[in-house]
Length: 101
Image 1 (cartoon, helix red, strand yellow):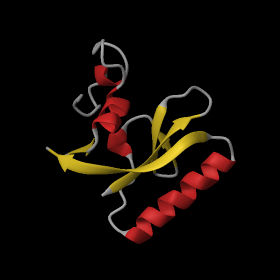
Image 2 (cartoon, rainbow, N blue to C red):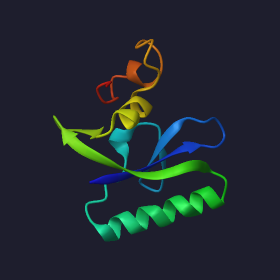
Image 3 (cartoon, helix red, strand yellow):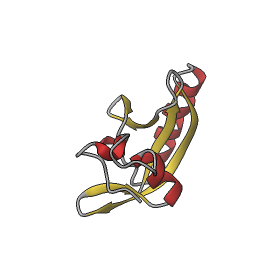
Image 4 (cartoon, helix red, strand yellow):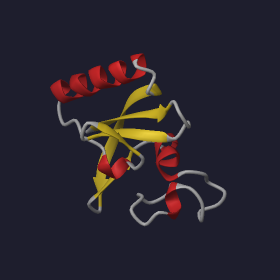
């Protein structure tokens, strides 16, 4: 399973493609379950980058853990949760955010 992630150009926040837009939490991301869905997400990401909406567009691996979408790689877990030194700030302070790495 894969999701499309990027950084929003206006403020640098990590975002994930979800339902026609960009969500600030990975849990809302559209999940690609096959190559066709991955190709569709890649095309959406390329168009968004070309329109200067986002930068650093990538498909990343995710897993469903305890009914939550969770990035597989540590780097992506950190991007999903926010700063690692203060858990009371950033995305990890939000109750709907996935578990921090």
